[in-house]
Image (cartoon, rainbow, N blue to C red; front, side, top):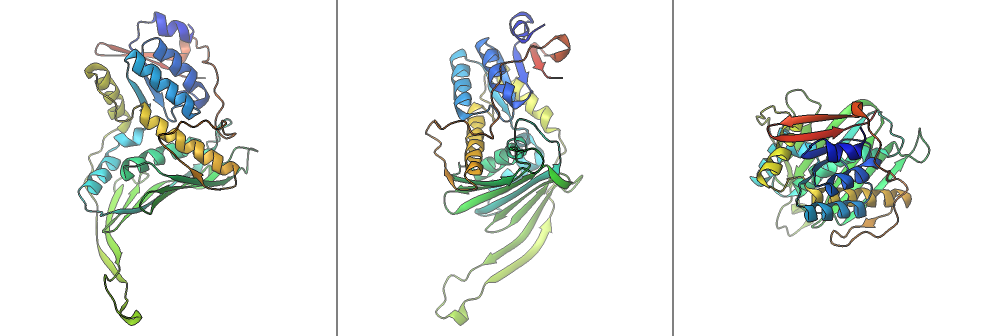
Length: 327
C-alpha cells in the first residue's frame, strides 16, 4: 500500500510524519492537501519557504498542523518557564546549551540540523522573543561537507544572547542547559536521573553609585542551591495527547506551524553563517527568506513509496492516526 492510498483509502483522520527531514515537506504537503490533521517531527521542513507553504495549506484546509518540539512538553522545561515567569531568576542575561554525543552520523543533514532544534525551541520559549542575529562555526571531520561539530550563537534584543554547542564526536552524552539571570541561575541536566533542575542563588551585583575607583567593588553573592520538585511525565505522551486534543477541540497547538517556521529560519541562518566561516547573519522574522537553499540544508525529496510494513495506524477514541516511517 503506497502513501497516497494510505492518505485516501485508509479512513485516517490524522498523519504523523517521523521520517528523514528530506521527506517532511512532500509528505506533509500531500497529507494537508488530503485534509488530514498533520504532525511533523522536527525540523518542520528543509526551508522556510516550504514551511510557509505548509502553513498556508493547513489554514486553507482548516486542519491542525503541529510540529514535534517535544521538549516544550517536558516537565523540566515547563518548570523552568514557571520559575522565570515568577521572577525568581530575574532578567535572563544569557543561556548556554550543550547537546553532545558519539554519533549518530547523518548523511543528509549536519549536526546543527540534527541536534540544535531541541535547544533552539527551548531557548525561544524561555527568551520569549526571536533572535536578531545568528553566528555559527563548525567543522566536518568524518564526512566531507557535513559538519559533525558546530557552535552557534543567537543574539537577542536588549543585549541578551544564547549559545548552542552540538557534536557527534563527543565521548559522553551531554544534554545540559544553563540559564543565567540577574538574580539566580538554573542548570538543567536532562541526562540526570533525578535532580534534572538545580537553581543556584548566585549572582554578581554592581554598586549603583560610586565617586572614586577605590569605592567601586563587585559584590559576589553565593547563596543556597535548591532542587525543584518535578513530576515525572513522558513528554512524548503529553505531546501526542495535545495533538489529539487540538484535533478534537479545534485548538491551536503550542508548537504550531509558525513555531516550526521560526526554528527553520534560525537553522537556515546558521547554515548561511557556516558557509561564511561564522560571519553574522541578520534575521527578520517578518520577511520571507528568498535566499538560496543553504548547502547544509537537506534537499527536499518526493514522498517515498511505503508498503504495508512501513506504516502504523493507531486508533485513539474516534481518531485514526497514520504513522508512516522508513526502513
